[in-house]
Amino acid sequence: MPLAMLRVAIYARPDREDALLTAREAYRRLSELGAEPLYEASIAGLLGGPGVDLRFTPVDAVVVIGGDGTLLRLLQLLGDRSPILHLVKVARRGFLFEDIPPEESLRLLERLVSGDYWVEELSRLRVTAPGYNGSALNEAAVLALGSKVAGLRVEAGGMVLYKGLEGDGIIASTPTGSSAYNYSAGGPVLHPLLRATVLTPVNPLDRRMGSLVLPGDMEVSILVERTTRPVKLIIDGVQERLLHRGALVKVSLTAPPARVARYREREPRPRLPWLPGYTF
Image 1: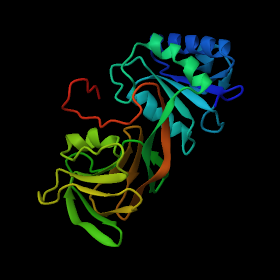
Image 2: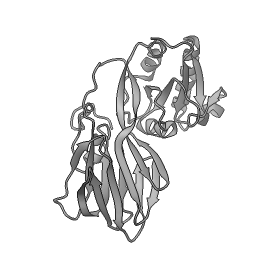
Image 3: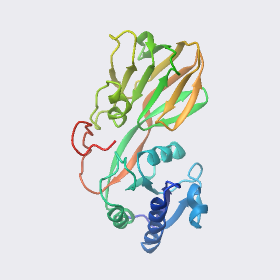
Image 4: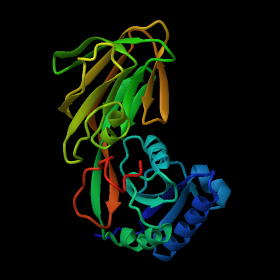
């Protein structure tokens, strides 16, 4: 059902002229369609329009102009809020974006405002650690720094999954993220309809320690048991935190999902990196 006076934020890469020009055009079209457009605070000053800080102010939808990195940075701003996301690709990498020209994506704003779309829900990890409490669309990775080796202990569901895991670290991925860093580290690709978390050790010294796929609502605990230098927690390649010996990271597939407006296929499809058209 169409929403009366839809509040739509516009979020774009501030360092690309084409993204800013597209943001300005999106603002004009949304105004003509009867919505209330607002530039996100990071670009409002550049474009001279009304702004909104998405860290604190809820909106009904967000027009995301850029690529995968733009989307991941936006989701960190949103926290647990899940407005409808309308994706406009103006970057080389747009794995989750429909591969259509920006002009066609702008025409689809009419369908966004009228409510003529279906929603693909992308599961997100809830991640807690010293200095961080948030979510991840792709993955949370606990990684050693430089040439050092981290010693980790990983538990879930009352079981020890990895005891004395030594190597470069471990990746906890969502189905969406399973075809990204997890896949490059040798992990499996998960179908998007699976509600599961995949754990993949990174260069383990004991090669018997392979990937595990777990129920998504099962909380995974990653303890930094041994390290001569701090290790790093990396969330979606956007957020980073240093972790010291004794730090505990907890992940589970229980954060509110990201909700993406789709206008074509009615069902999520697996994103397979070995097939033509894969752009991540």
